[in-house]
Image (cartoon, each protein chain N blue to C red):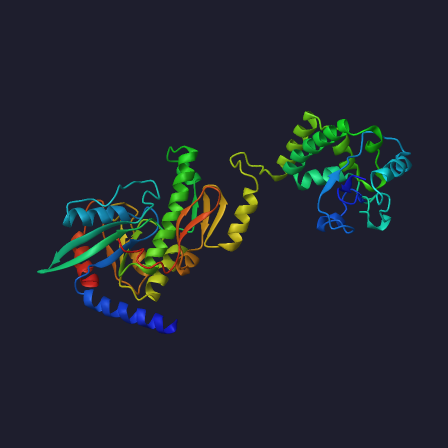
Amino acid sequence: MGLLTNLRDSISRVTDGLFAADEPKRIGIYGPPNAGKTTLANRIARDWTGDAVGPESHIPHETRRARRKENVEIERNGRTVTIDIVDTPGVTTKVDYKEFLDHDMEKDDAVRRSREATEGVAEAMHWLREDVDGVIYVLDSTTDPFTQVNTMLIGIIESQDLPALILANKTDLPGSDVQQIANAFPQHETIPLSALEGDNMDEVYTKIAEYFG
Amino acid sequence: MPHQCTTCGRTFPDGSKEMLSGCPDCGGNKFQFKPAGATEDPSADEADQASGSPAGPSGSAVDPSDRTPPAPADEPAPDESAADRRPSESADETPNEAAASADSASEADGTEQIADRSDEDTAQASARSEVVSPDELDRASRDVEPADAPPAEEEPQPGIDALRDELNDQFESIRIVSPGQYELNLMELYDRQEYIISLQEDGRYVIEMPDAWGIQDE
């Protein structure tokens, strides 16, 4: 059995080596619900491919299944970086259908959305373990970043040695505090942006090319 | 003597385990059932012995020690406890037995209906002697349902709370507080090899088995 496992590992290492240069890196966009992950994914996809990734919404857990946009070619400083963008459902430790009732939703719909959101978190965690080569961690800069979810996810990303870029989103909003985000995760570089307005996207693309190219 | 070997005629009390492996005397495995009649005559015992002997030579040779002991006196209502344990079966069986009893009784002559009632519990006796009323059936089925059914109106399936608790014990990465309310253990979800594809309404999970080669390839 051990022999078989070793053989399998060897084969996968060889194949990884063969295709490493050709295969685009798979970059997961992670973060808590309503941080603007889908808005960012759509912004990147529209800027470089013309298509969108998925619908955006003010209601939390709009994205309940990971969505992927493949072969996004980003040009920076004369070179092209090709990545697959994975927009993941917002990660949280509690999902309660009651929070959806405030958004004019019937109870049945809210319960179903809640169940799907829970499945989405499970999926996002699974992808983080199995299937991403780098992480763009999106935070809402108008909210407190010191949460259990953020600490845990950043910890997992660090333990995996995944390259990670922290984005302080929603700088267009009056309560935005980028420094608070930077202070929360001083070991990582924090880039401010407004995915909605497209503010500071140039720096974001430069950093994506630098981190994941 | 509810049961009689059709080969040698030996009789067995109701509930006897002896006959389960064949007649101990002749090895026969065919028995006829002689139900107790509706007669409540306390002198039935003697009458049974007297009328039973012509039916088979060894008919009266039943050792009292072989008989199944009667229901303990401290069990107040054996029929109720039986109904609780097997609600559907008892509801189904009772009319059948009663019907069988009615058929046999109509064929048999009066003396054969007389039985030794001392080693028969009251539930069997009453089931055999009278047909259960539709009201009683209805009541029995209704008595059982509330015991198993959950108090929550939105969950019609019985035992769903127990099922949920059991699943939560086994699978702590997602705790279902109530329908639509979940608590997630992110580290557990991350550490698990299995990937939860979907949650079912009744608390079950659909998972992708780990190490399923090629399943990630699209």
